[in-house]
Image 1 (cartoon, rainbow, N blue to C red):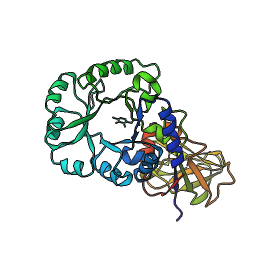
Image 2: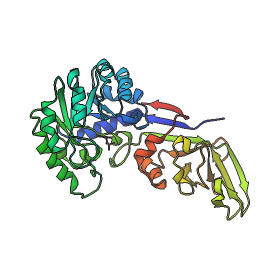
Image 3: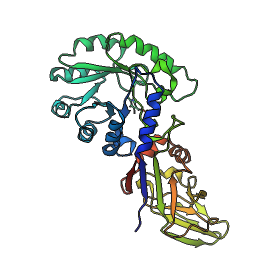
Image 4: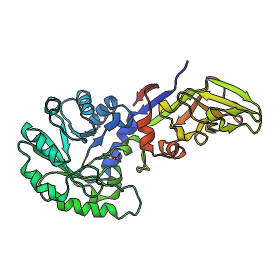
Length: 347
Ligand SMILES: *Cc1c(COP(=O)(O)O)cnc(C)c1O
């Protein structure tokens, strides 16, 4: 059975990094966030491509992601692990030269004896991870042999136009970082890069914009996804399609079945709402998305025959447009793309 094909454009990722880097001044280093297997695009390929483009610092979420990325990018780039440090992990951090992002007093204490380089994260209003104002001075005293190479925080609404909270968080961050004079500081993810100079500090940490997602509207698209039509069937008026019989033919219809379902990251909520494309012509999803299959109404598309490749992501549909149909965000589409595709990297 032919399989769906996902193509990842490494040249576009590199171009997106250059474009984001160009938005900040020469005093700001632009890092790359490649957690969750580089937002589903493959950290083993994306990491080296970005290192070759000039990226000197990477961020991942998990220790295991950091260990794998170190092998992919070699010894030179800094690799920060956002989810922090627990006692017993010092061997793994040390062996791969990874830097934990310490976000709680317990993490600072656990890392103190091990002579690691590390970032310190402050909470400036998101209440997810990070030291509170009152915890900063004690943490500084408790660093032990840890060398702090970065202080950072994270904006919760940088992609909300006109929102005042980024500026409030920025001011809080300025106050908090004063406890670590001379240490490079980082506040901006993709959204923060777009907010302008005041948010750039010494290091920017874009993720989703590298991979073609909003809020970086000027991004070059990175991921394309095409699936072959397995079958086309004639459906008479009144007949139903798919689980729960949620779609019914109102006229003599043709239904095409493609081998992509929610197990492949085609979010189930896109059932009856999503669209595929063939030669630019929209093919509405007919019925629910199943685990391995999706059905399309191809009544008005004579080119839809078995073996024809339909587009789910590509020139006609961005990750954010598909996300919209599924009631989610581009981030979730990207990171949901499964591993059953034939995956190629170009560029
Ligand atoms: C995921 C993440 C980023 C990257 O965010 P994007 O919105 O994808 O650019 C940066 N910093 C932290 C702490 C993150 O968790």
